[in-house]
Image (tube, rainbow, N blue to C red; front, side, top):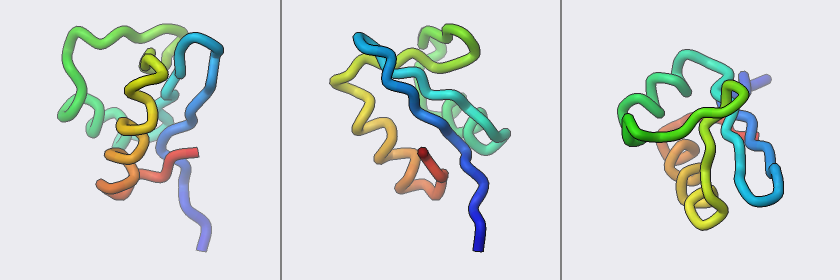
Length: 66
């Protein structure tokens, strides 16, 4: 069974970009991430120290993160 990727994570050196590919991912971020979060090039900007926990939380709630 093929799963749709909800979030694509890009390591950009000093930050990670979480590209929200589906409405489910966008809704999850709206519900779990501060309104003051930074977006760049369409992706959620995340510091290294938070990226692992953010991805784990998304996966725990059923999102497919790649």
